[in-house]
Length: 384
Image 1 (tube, rainbow, N blue to C red):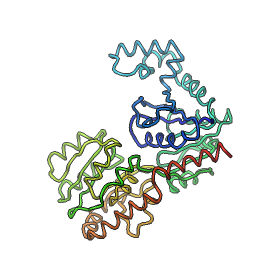
Image 2: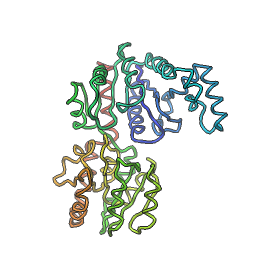
Image 3: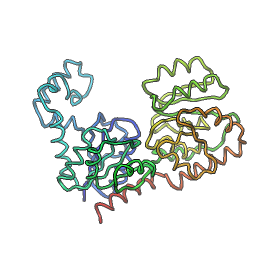
Image 4: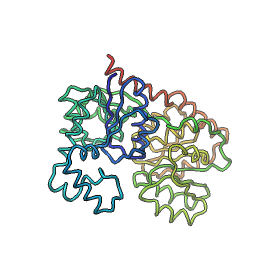
């Protein structure tokens, strides 16, 4: 059986972790799949859900396994810092950073793993650690390399573009993102969008818009999501606005939410419970300045929700079929107009849009459709 190695800077939770999980599940039926993390993932990472037969390695763990001196330094660092984390997470400490070229050790470990693969599948950003090194190793060993881009593509340095030319095939979420790279370099690519990991529970939700529509935000609390702007907009309005997620701005958000009755913080929802969030809202707001997807967009479609979004990531292509779209400007300056326009829609009109979103999801974005897209890519390269 041919071997596929998935390399990604995964952590425990996030969109990239969901994609790693989907790729692995799509390919494990046909190939021997292993996952190699260059990030901080633990064995509880969502990337590993339902994959008991898939090998999982962490680069820092592999480095200290193969170098007894670095292992000892990590041990002493862990003792000095109260042993609050796994041993391999103490790899980079004041002593090892001073006396060892850790990056060289990481590249050596990376090369050993890649050398055993028939196909390498990268899920990464352009600034992800060891991305270029992985591509170079694949080229040297004549191993095909697929690169699934996971963020919006902006202008890249020419030296970087020259290195990217050694990628066998790119996988983008949207034609828009593919064009961002095509404007800078010719490249072979396919489009595979995202899906809702827990689509069964989302598809079971009833489509019954409330008489007074409830708006919601679900995501990371960061500046790029413009969540504080949304809260400032809704805090003195009559509409209910529900907020779910976590991040650096959480304390700021709670300070405002606690003093405004129409705002409510629902907490953090993991992927298993995400349908509970969508069951409470009618309209999802996507206010991001930059995304590749986002996942919450397809989740809202599966849940049969009304979507108001910036023209971010793949959202233009996802909602292209709608006759009437509700696009947020990047600075959110038209939000008041959009809320007013939605408020004048009849319940029938709102319901029709919700139903169309769910039907479009069923036709194009199901888990099986996306997994089939991934499997076809592997077959195209390995079985031709």
